[in-house]
Amino acid sequence: MALIELTQKGLFCQQADVYIDPWRGVDKAIVTHAHADHARWGSQAYLAHQASESVLKLRLGKDISVESLAYDQPIHINGVKISLHPAGHIPGSAQVRLEYAGEVWVISGDYKTYDDGLSTPFEPVKCHHFVSECTFGLPIYQWEPQEKVFADIHRWWAKNQEENRASVIFGYSLGKAQRILHGLNPEQGKIFVHPTIAATNEALKTDGLILPDFEKAGQEVDKNDYKGSIIIAQPNAMGTSWMKKFGNYRTAVCSGWMSIRGAKRRQSADIGFVLSDHADWPGLNTAIKATAADRVYLTHGSTASFGRYLREQGLDAVELTTLFGEEEN
Ligand SMILES: [Zn+2]
Ligand SMILES: [Zn+2]
Image (tube, rainbow, N blue to C red):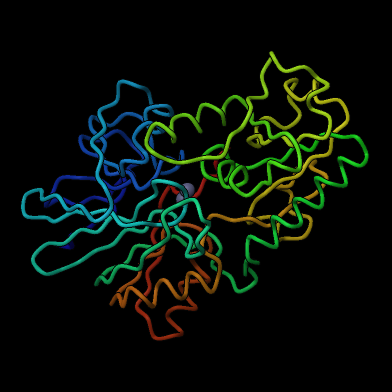
C-alpha cells in the first residue's frame, strides 16, 4: 500500500492516521496553509506551521485544537517521520514531508518559487513522490519580478492622487493583502486596509510576522482622509456599501489571473496587476525537477495539460481529482 492515498476525505496517510488538507472533518489534519480550500472546518486536531496557528483559529474558530511546528522540526507518528518545509506561497505555508521505511513523500500544498520578501522562501525537498499543485501550469504563465509590478502599482496610485482620488486595490485577505502592504511605499500616501484584512494582519503578527504599519478602513475614519490614500481590500468587498465613504476612487485587482487579457475575474475593476502567490510555468518545472521525484501527482490547476507535458518529458506524472483550487475571497 502506498504511504499516501487519495480517499473521499482527502490525502490520507494510513500508517500515521493523518490527513493532509482534508476537505471533511477528520481526527487529525495536517494543514499546509490557512486558505479556505486547504484548511477546512470540522477536524478534531490540526497540525500546522507556527506562523499559521492564530490565523487558522481566526478562520476556523478559536476553540479548534492546533499543534504547531517550526519548519524542519520533525515529529514521529507510528514510525512515520513528518516535517514541514517552506512553500513560499503565503506566510506560514508549508510543504509536508512524510517518510516511512525509506520512502519519502512531499505534499506541496500551494507554492511559489519566487521570493516575495515576506514569506519564508520555497525550499525544494528531495522525495520519491511529489504531490504538486499546478494552478498556473501552462507556458503562458510567466511572472514579472514583483519590483516591476509594484512600480506599476505606485504609478497607478500616483495618477489617482493627481486626480484627487482614492485607490482601492483588491487581493486575497490572507497572503496577497500582506504582500501588497509590504510592497507599498508608505511615503507616497496613507495606507488603509479592510477590517477583515486588519484582523488577519493582527493574527499573523501574533505568530511573529513583521508587517509595516497600516490603518483600518473602519467607521471611525473621516472620509477626507481617504483622498489620495490607497486601500487594500479582499475581492468580496468590491461593490459593497463599505466603499461608499471613499468618494472618488479607482479600483485594481492583484492576481495571477490578471495575466489573461479580459479575465472575467477582474470583475468590474479599472485595472489588473499580475501578482501571483503560485508558481508560474518555469517555477513549477524547476520545482518538480529539484525534487528528483520518481512520480509526480498533480492536484489542482491545469492538471491535464501539465500532466501530459510532464509525461512527454519522460516523467511519471499522474493527475489527482481533489477539491483544492476554489478561489479564496
Ligand atoms: Zn493557497
Ligand atoms: Zn490551493
